Amino acid sequence: MVYLVGEALVGKAPEIAHIDLIIGEKSGPVGTAFAQGMTNVSQGHSPLLAVIRPNLPPKPHTLIVPKVTVKDMGDAEKIFGPAQAAVAKAVADALEEGIIPKAKADEWVVICSVFIHPDAKDYRRIFHYNYAATKLSIQRALSNYPPVDKIMYDKDRATHPIMGFRVPRLWRPPYLQIALDIPSLEKTKKIIAALPKSDNIILEAGTPLIKRYGTAVLGDLREISKDKFLVADLKTLDVGKVEVDLAFDESADAVVVSGLASVDTIDQFIYETNRLGIYSFVDMMNVEDPLAKLQSLKMPPNVVIMHRGIDTEGRAEHRWDVVKEVKAAFKGKRLLVSVAGGIRPDNIQAALKAKADIIVVGRYITQSRDVERSTREFLTQMQGDIDLFRVHTE
Image 1: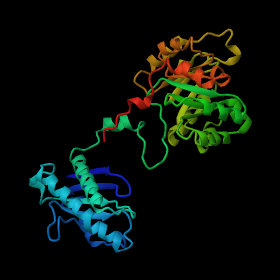
Image 2 (image 1 turned 180 degrees about the vertical axis):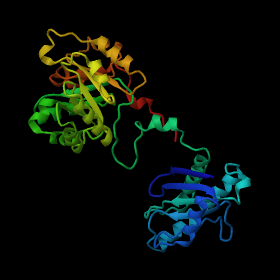
Image 3 (image 1 turned 120 degrees about the vertical axis):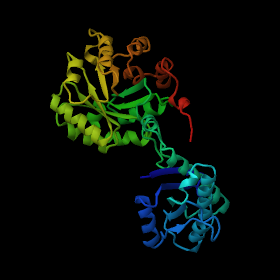
Image 4 (image 1 turned 30 degrees about the horizontal axis):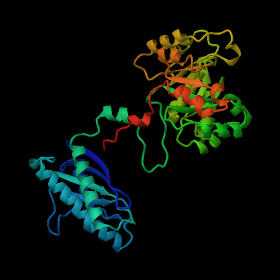
């Protein structure tokens, strides 16, 4: 039973074309939907057959369904004119070029949802954009596009053009995480404003900052850093689900639970972050055996933090060996390892050599007289900006 789905977006507003399309056999569910569409007419969304010109439909027969409500004759002319002709011509050309097998011309039908913006005026652009989008969606349907590997690769890298903001994801480490621990919102905003622009930078609302202002401070930081990955360092010890929800409601991209919390608390914490689609960080500060703690959990977090506390920096050494052990134990898993506590430009290479994915830096940057210069001291030792590696292929 043939049941194929295609989609394509082509052009520029207001004439931009967006096509959703299904192709299948007349004797199957697509054929049933085709017949029902022809006989069940709704006001403002009346389906119509695609025609190259009056009295000349393409094959396979194609049903056009307007996505936007047709309110007047001006809207109707766009659908019954350039859009109708464009879809029909694309189907006919796809048949001629062998994209649609000629043997299926009388066996298949096509249902094509068409978007025409009410402000669209240029009929030539309406035709060209809808022709291109329809033909591309047919090609994609017949090739089962996209492949699963592409979806897995692009899902955390892609940005929807109409949203107006980017949902940041940690897909290309290493990252520099700025720990905003100063309990002053005014000073914190000045620090953020002074940071250089880089996709390698993520922001952490530090525990002192959150303790002073509450989780509402996350919303304040989001207003000035709408596209940045924002970590809420709650160091949760109990009621894991509740604290995740508090941070989530204030737009945090990640929340931190203490590794000293019970296994039950951490499990519930990770479950809730997964349910809500944000990242779980487990801070292993003062945890004697971080690897054993991780292995006791039902599922690993997204990030584990190897943290040397500020009060112990003078006598505690960085445990780069544990970083390597965790990476080896969870090889093949999407587990990132973060290092924190006294990281400076002169020891960052040791962290990178240990394969740390996130470098957490606080005072060296936040208390610097020149925040931008201090930040660049770290960035220059890390790989290039992520945006330089984005390739537009569609």
